[in-house]
Image 1 (cartoon, rainbow, N blue to C red):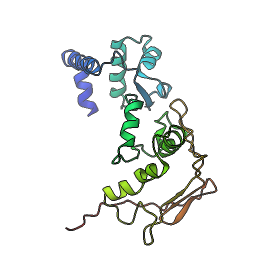
Image 2 (image 1 turned 90 degrees about the vertical axis):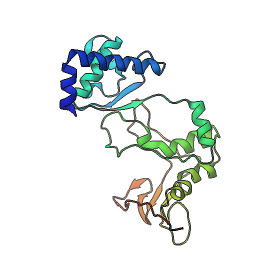
Image 3 (image 1 turned 120 degrees about the vertical axis):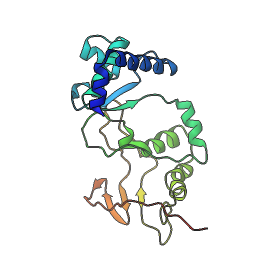
Image 4 (image 1 turned 180 degrees about the vertical axis):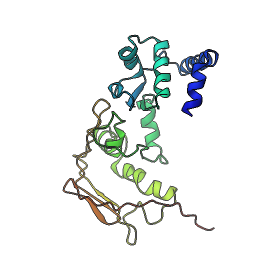
Length: 230
């Protein structure tokens, strides 16, 4: 907890150990600084939102040395912590993983409040990006394969009965989109933009997007894993 963390940071010996471990961890990843870590939301000081740790250290402490970067990280933690975007993936690896038949497409983004912080763009356009960039532009996947990875594959893998397929008797979770127009519009620097080219969405048979506008309906429900006896 924060109280114990503050206590340890106040102890010069323990703090030195923490700093040394942070530097060792950084070197172990083949990195020289914390520029890969971007502050998405820090409620204690919102002026740092959208800056990476190197930029934030320079702005806040007047120096972007590694020691100052670490001091800033500790300061952020001491003041309630924050959320971040961490750049560490390889585009070439991503394409290989994406082609694997058992790779599912999903997003671990939390629910976004429009205009708040500088969050990861996946919160606004994860699946649209796959359909626009990796299907339409780069042709890494066929459209049919991408849809399967977003729908029936995860539904069947996690035993969500009646989901993931357009089949009589199933729940009507339906997304209507234009393959030629679907587009993610959210970026790392300017994330608060909804995807376009998706004029209709039905959740449990209830229209929640009609003619590109939210209807106000909240038709979703928690899905539970169903164990099938053998």
